[in-house]
Amino acid sequence: MSSVLFLFLTHLGIGIAATLPIVGSAAGAQFFRFNSGLAAVLMLVGLAFRPVPSQVTDLESVGFAALVVSTGTLLVYWASIGRGLASLRPWLLMTTILAGGLSMVSQAIGLSAGEMAPSAALTSVSFLSSAALLGGTCTAMILGHWYLVLPSMDVSLLQSMVKFHIGSTVVRIVVVMAVLGVALVSWQAPSGAGYGQYVLSLDGVFLWQRVLFGLVSPALLSYLTWETAKIRATQSATGILYVDFFTVVVGEVLAKYLLLSTRVPL
Image (cartoon, rainbow, N blue to C red; front, side, top):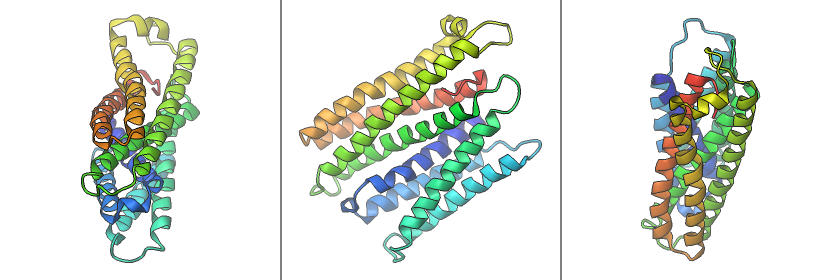
């Protein structure tokens, strides 16, 4: 369970940080301070759940160092908001995003070592698309709520964020479909059963829940959010985004669990 929480929390935190450049400055300093602080806390808590390997490899050292750098620069970014250093903040945020991406790729490569391990490339793409979906949904939800704080904000800010959320949902669906296609051809359980048999078995219920909550529901809800955002109904859009974020969280937690239990990076 600690490994699931480590992957989920760090990916969510990195995803939130990665979506901040999409939001315009009109959202105000407090918006960026709140979101960067939230992302940093999630990453710090995630680090607390990091499994301690019996043998530390160079790859694990690089991944851990990248995650520490990502978290540290994000904390500096958070602390600098409203206190000067405006010219440095874009570089701090870029360092956070790049180091966070490197840490996720390192995690993916590490999980791809050994017999019956998933493809490193597919796992890396899966992790990156997961962070984009998690971060996009969370940031869009908070931004929608921010219209209660700053009612004068232009609705185009929310519309842009919802567009990103829709795009990240589509990418996540494509990635999972590609992973499923590879698994159906190459995956085999210790018992000798193929992935098709696993999908139709009792254990496969977690896969179906992952698809329903984490892919189908966000696809439908993101479309409904866009339709409400188009007519400037920000409160309705925010309400939908709360439900949307919940389904994405359930889906991505299940995805991490399925990766660790079946070695398929869904």
